[in-house]
Image (cartoon, rainbow, N blue to C red):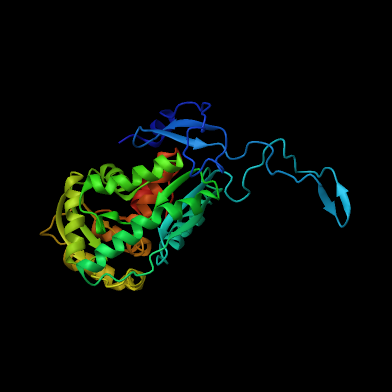
Length: 340
């Protein structure tokens, strides 16, 4: 695994890039220029659009006004210079999550709030777009199939909504292994998102691989909100990704909304009694399900577990920032952020 200094050194100089080839889905709202970087973790080519090209902000023809008097200029405002988004001046992330998810945005903002105190990580913000899932029931196999259809068919509309804020990149906030048990099928909707938007999209399957690689972990346990079928899917996906899934624990939530209501005490009990046992000899525990918070549990248990607890929300944001070259460590949100 590269050091942070090596990751930064590996990034090439920014270069001009034309976004004219983007599809009609985003052509009306995309900026004309950007820069090309190499993903610090994956090595892939990533386009980071230029969002502050002047005039920014555009001023209407009537000009600024004080009461009814036109004001031609004002100290601190020069649209021809190109001003960044005040609160997201470093990076604006588009977050695509199910409409029933009440956890992920809050958890990511809690991380970003802490990270904002670290040099180089201030000015990073989120813009959330919801994937409408009007029937989040997960009691039967038929329910799960219906939920899969809802989510996948709703992604394009959510993307359209999210792109209106002109983010620099995207995060897909969903455990797709819950509804898709084939690696190729899991990657297909992500490829569509990137093709339609022209943006880099951070995904759980990529983030998990990078996080586990950082710890050199192979034998893993899975903590999920899924039922037995969902856990089988997750086991299959993580096995296909190259890991040995030793044990799984699923809370079998019958409604996607209810996942956010699983108490931290129950998560801790599942981890200590069923996953992190001497017999399992795990290298790491991986938590799936973006509507199930894990930050406080990770901070409480990692010092005594002796192995990392990699939560999906923690890892997704970590991966998105590290991949884009933001490599400063952050304390208080688990070993992954502190050590890599």
